[in-house]
Each structure stands twice: as structure tokens, then as C-alpha cells.
Length: 221
Image 1 (cartoon, rainbow, N blue to C red):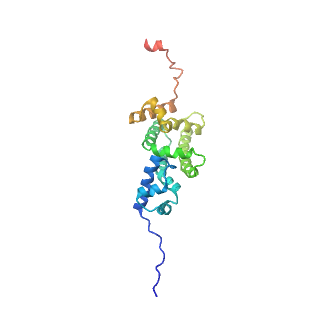
Image 2 (image 1 turned 180 degrees about the vertical axis):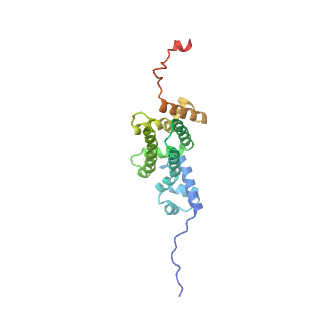
Image 3 (image 1 turned 90 degrees about the vertical axis):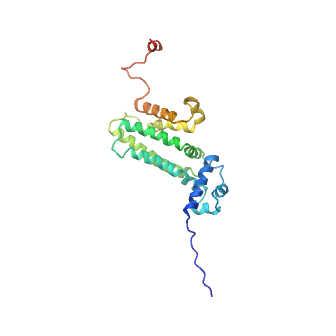
């Protein structure tokens, strides 16, 4: 009588998992989440369709894993602001500059995230919002520390966070419109947007009472 071998769980193959993530990243970026099928992902990765469920549970699970490193990279950047005590104006400025370049270098993925967040019927909104909320909480903590130190006026910190991030995100999310105003994507344009956003956020846009605005005639005199 021959004995049957006990059932064993398939060994997880890191190479297969990586190929699925790479294929998903390419296809999601090119066609969006809804425009990409699990069959297309499996074909591009060169593996069996069932392995998507085995490794990630679903296409939604794949999306979560594709965008997770990019959201976490933003959180690490935010947390680094608190590593050396309360932030200074210079550190806040450096943070805004770094955030602008982080968003720009991963613009495809952030557009992918927001495309799903804007869909009321998206099955991944709750999963995507959770890590985003962690980022928001970390950023609000940085602003609260700056306020506690007396660096900020008595303004609503949540609204201030939206104002601070708005210009950086608008260029990426509304690129066809924004690029007509300040120019096509380049390191110089990203620096310009980030530096201007930092200056306006930290100092405002109006001249102070001691430096009244000059008329055009005075400026050319």
C-alpha cells in the first residue's frame, strides 16, 4: 500500500511576486486600474492567473502593493521633519522643496491614486485612504510643533496643510492646464513651483506695511 504525500502549501516565489508587481505597475500606469485586467497582468508577468490571488488576493490587492511604497516614502519624508526637534522656517522650506520633487518623480502613481480616490464606487478607496490619513496626521504633527514653538499665526492647521500641498499637487494632477502656465515638466519648473509655494506659505504674497507696493511709474523711474 502506497502512502499519500501530505498536501503542502506552494512555496512563495519572490521572483514571481516581483514580476507581478512590475507588470501591474506598468499596466496600471499605462491604462489605469480599471483599464487593466488580471489576465493582462498575468500574461505580462509570464505566470498563471491564479497566482495573483495567491500572492495578493485580488487586483485591488495588487494596486495596494503597487502604490504602498510611494505613500510610505512621503510619510518617511514627513517624519524626518520631526527627527531633529521642532522645524525651523528653513527646514519647512526644504521639506516643501523635497515634497515637490517626490511628487514629481512618482507623478504617474499619484495620479493613479487620485483617479481611484475620485471614484465614489472604487473598491480600493478605503484601503488607499488609510495610509494617506497616516501621512496627513504626520504632517499635521509637524505643523502643530511649529505652532507650539510660536512660528505660526493662529490659523487652522488642517486648512494650512491643504494650502501648502495644493500648488505641488495641482501641477501634477492638472498637468495639461498647469504646464501651460509655468511650462512643461523639468527640474527648473518643479524648483520654481516649490520655491514659490514655500515663499507664499511661509511669508505670504503681499508686501508688508513697511514696503508699500510701487506703482508701475515708480518702478520704472
